[in-house]
Length: 167
View 1 (cartoon, rainbow, N blue to C red):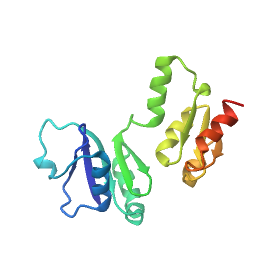
View 2: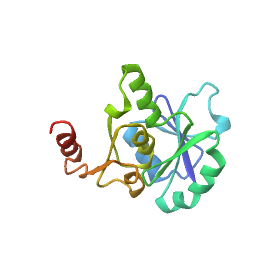
View 3: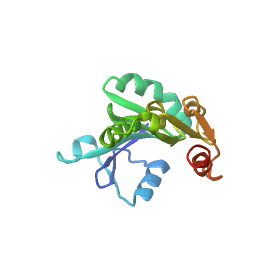
View 4: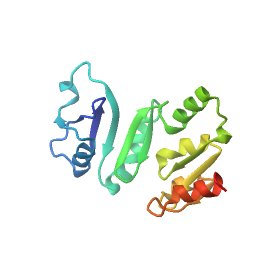
């Protein structure tokens, strides 16, 4: 599987000489460079912000169970869309982030509404009082939602806000 690490300046590092379209697109979206480096060639002081396995959906589907088995004890392995399999600090997820913010602002989880559409939103859905999944979200994410709203393109967030907040 192809992989890349993203540093804190949004530069992409990969040991793959045959760079996938996914990595090239990610570099373009981040307006960053792609550096072909083996782990041994990376600077000692590099600050890695994110590590992803990347590839076509069928390749990730085939390899995801083994990655989870190998890494999930010490890391959080989260599927982000069809082409990303993120390896994160086990405490780094959207649910933990919302909990930290809610604790700081003294807001009860039942008072929080969260919107999402992918598996990386499930930890957030489990934490908040009102989890809303987009209609175009994955079936897996929808299982954890309290409500399914319309798609992004069809103003799903606005429709849910009108239903639950401005009603």
